[in-house]
Image 1: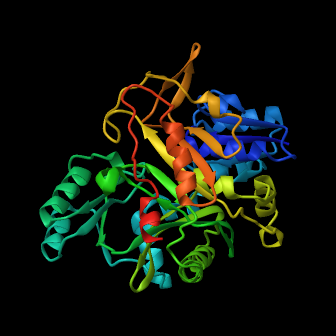
Image 2 (image 1 turned 45 degrees about the vertical axis):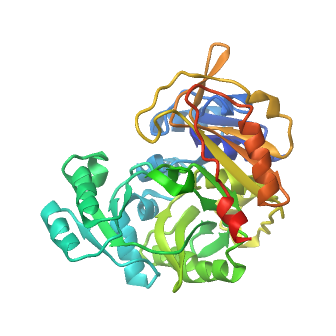
Length: 424
C-alpha cells in the first residue's frame, strides 16, 4: 500500500517511520514533511490545509490511507472532505475534533457527562472575566478557548498575572481569534500524565502512558512550549490509577461524543492531572501528542497500519495491540529564543551517524534541506528518542547523542525523566 502522512513535525516523522516498518506499506509520502521525513519518505509540496490539492494527489497516486498528524487540518474539516470523496483517512471529523478545538466545548461536555475535571468558567467579555477573577484565589489557570499550538495556557501565580493573561488573549489578541473567548479554571495539583487511546466510536484501546515536559527550562521553569521532551511508560504512577483514568475519563468521553452525534475515530489524547481525588482532565486533544508520539510509537509492536485499517472498518476491538517492555525517552532540541521569536536557517550537524542504531531515533521537526545542508526551520528543531531497559539507560543514551548534534543557539532541557528517577 501507499500511505500519506499529513504534517511537518516530529510527530509526523515518527508516524512515517513507524508506517515504513509495515510489510504492507510500499511507499510513504509526507505533506509537506521535513528534512528528516525526506530520508525515508517522499515529501510533497502541499501544506496541511491544501485540502483540494491533497485530495487530487491521493486520487492520482492511488494512496490507500491518509493519516492526519496535526490539529489544524482536523478542525478545518479535512476528514469530512476526504470522506465525501470516498477516500480512506485516519482522524476524527470536524465535529468530533471540536473536543480539542474549543476548550469551552470540552469543559461543557465533561460537566454534562460527569467526567472529572477542574472547576471552570468561560468568558467572551474581559470585564466579566476580571470580576470573576476578583472572587478567586491563585494559582489559577487561564486558557485561550481555541487552538494556540500548545502555548495558549497560562498558570498564573497571582490574580494580577491572571488578569494580564486575560488581557493579552482577549484585548491584545496574542493568539488571534483563539483568545476571543477564554476559559478560567481551577489549578489542579498532582502529577501530569499523557494518556492516548486508539478510538472507534465507543471502542477505546489505551496506549502506554507518557509524561511530557511543557516548560522550556530545567525544573519546569519558564514559559510553556509545545513540549520539550517526554518518557514512557511512567513507572511511578500505578497501573491501577491509569486503569481508573481509562474507565472514568477516556471511555466516558468516547461514549459522550457518540451520544452527542459526534462519534470519534482516531487518536483521543487525554492530558491528565493525577490528583489526590483521582485522575482529572486538563485538556483533550484529537490526535497523537507531540512529543509523546516520539516515545510511544517506538514501543508499539503491532503494525500501525493494521490498527488504522481496523479502525476504518470498525474492527478495532478485534486487533491485539501489544507493546514492548522497554522504556523510551525523547529530548527536544530547540532554537534560540523558542518559545518566543527564533532565527531559522542555521546549519545542523551530527544527526546522520545514528541512522543505523536500533535503539536510537532522531526525529526531525523544524528542519529542511538547503543544498547539501540540513538547516533549522522551526522552534522545536528535532528530538532524540532512545530505548533502554529503564529510564536511566534510555535517558543516558538520548543525552549522549544530543552531545554530538549541533546547531548555533541549540538548547534543550537536561532533566527529562528526572522526576521518574527521583520517585523510583
